[in-house]
Amino acid sequence: VESLFAMAQERFGRVDILVNNAGIAPFDVVETMPATDVRRCLELNIVAAYSCMSAAIRLMQATGDVGKIINIGSVRSHWTEAGDAGAYNASKAGIRSMTETVARQLHGTGSRIAVSLVCPGVVDTSLTNPAGDDRPDWLRPEDIARSVLHVASAPPEVNIFDVVVFSMAQKPW
Image 1: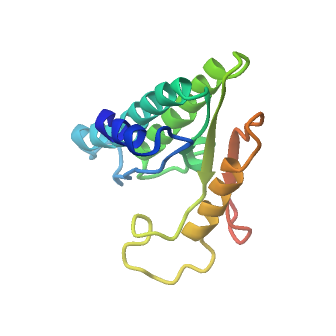
Image 2 (image 1 turned 45 degrees about the vertical axis):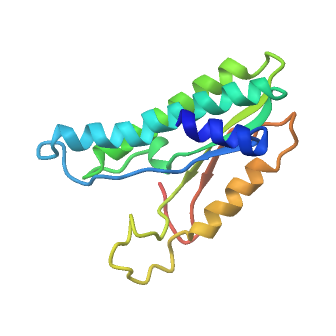
């Protein structure tokens, strides 16, 4: 992570926007999911995002104390479904908590680094639909991209903190 941000600084002089979008979702019930799968999920979904946020904030602070950090969470950080996604749900709740903590750390200090969270409902990707079945009621990746652009294009003195996105065809509650 450090070498990635050093390369960005060398090549571009600064980082304006970080979107933390990497993630995995091991599916299994708690009584049979190996702890190694849970650790791997938490490592990628939380620790990797933390490492990127830390490096981005340091670089943003050094180059004007302005920027946007947008973490991709999940509606499952707001409400969970019973079943086979305990590690994923826990990781997304962790991202939500971490995002709020860092936003509270920076807001009101004079910093113009906005830390935000975009929480999609189910999106038709290879993660959620590996068979590629027709899912017309699910969100499309471009729906989430437009939501991220909405957050990223807010004025520098504004933070759109928590955006929950779901298809109007779905019944999320």
